[in-house]
Length: 138
Image 1 (cartoon, rainbow, N blue to C red):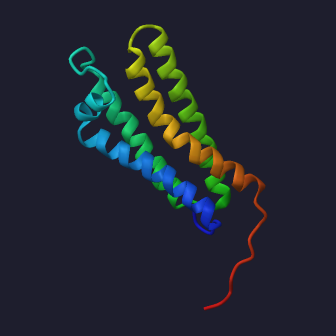
Image 2 (image 1 turned 90 degrees about the vertical axis):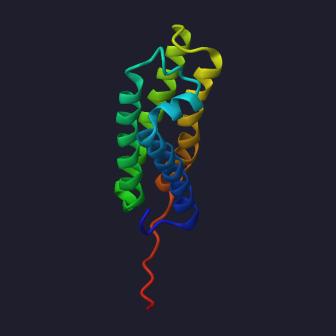
């Protein structure tokens, strides 16, 4: 996010805020987050561990993206897009196989979509953006 145009920084910031906030809640209280997403805790006793693994991944990604320059941000955003796309696909396949009902499946998909939209937009803008001259004013 370092040295980006304000609108790209805003998109990256929104993505980082969504990713970091949801992940922090998931790490601190995975059972509560599971309840909010409609995932039954009683029938998924190993899921709090999985939620915490996912949470650490997203916390680290948010911090790395927030502190990245343009070239590193592009690479990290591409990784975020791949991760969120596979998260959406995984939620879909879990719903199709009967692991989650329709509401639970959409709840899982929506968390990934919420981060995917600003990160894809930011990645596209970073890819087509012209280099900005550095401002040498004090």
